[in-house]
Length: 64
Image 1 (cartoon, rainbow, N blue to C red):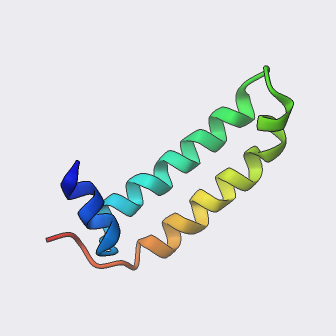
Image 2 (cartoon, rainbow, N blue to C red):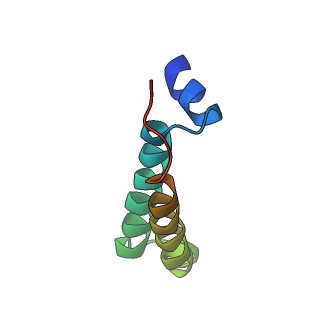
């Protein structure tokens, strides 16, 4: 867990790509769930944030 946070603070690609991927997956899940309207309403923005974040993070340097 310490390595994960170390990569986050040092702006390394691996940890940030994982965070972006989790955001994308969360947004898709929020889009497909039938229970909460607030989650469905904000699903597009969560997915879009994760996608843009993944594009930006792909330019970060690799981990050690």
